[in-house]
Length: 371
Image (cartoon, rainbow, N blue to C red; front, side):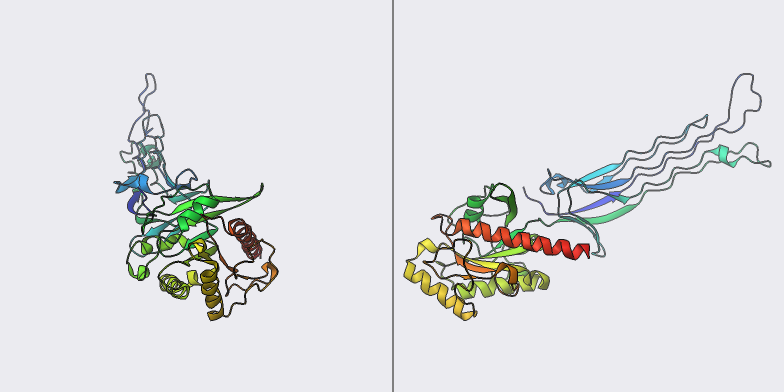
């Protein structure tokens, strides 16, 4: 089961109470107070674990709590600190305040460990309160209560390339062809019920992560279909690949406009992501039909067929649009090309082109962060 949104109450441990005790030893008259301090309550940590892919291990859990500190003992013995609560979450998890909606933590990097709630401090034992006027203090501090927060955990998958398209346009077939992912594939809508991540290896040293997102339908941003549940997963992707089905009853233009509209309704920032377009299932039509549909699409959006030299090996038998990687305009698609994962049309060139743009975007991001 894929669970990407859970609500939890999380508490740190209460501090242990200080001890009221008096020294009692043979041959030691008037021993005096020796009550030890209570142990601190356990802290709560979040840790990012690459081996965890969903939030399903929180299913059925409502309240997670660190252990309380133990009370102090005689002979000034300190109570044991409460055991910390370590909460493992997959990369891409956000911890959000349930009441205010504030993002408290944004957990991205594997191995990242963040203190979320500090445990309550242990109480002082009675020996701390001895004074000239109070030789036999019978008071010790109680431990302080731990802290409690009501939170919502949201998982937003991290990928370099997110596939965006209507149901049954070939996204699952593409990701299964180019990566190590094994999504369910069938000739009906919504076979992909959960997002799938696949590592696309390009040569011996280069690779990028591609996410197959469940198909978007009209009105997805308003809650229709499966799209709304998973649109959030595209938010973290550096680059979007629009999959437009050239053999669909919808025109290429209508598919593109509707997808852009749903993305913009969900997040204006998401709609401004760098992108490319793949016309899928080109093998389902004759070359003449496919050429006509692609040419009409390119003309309508003022895209010039074969704008720059083709260094990736896209087939010349079909029209396509390609930008120069060094002078890339993010307001236009980096490329708009026909593909077929089944017939292996333009798949290798697609992988190389996506790899180049992902590397370029990462370099730009690193330069911005270093500034």
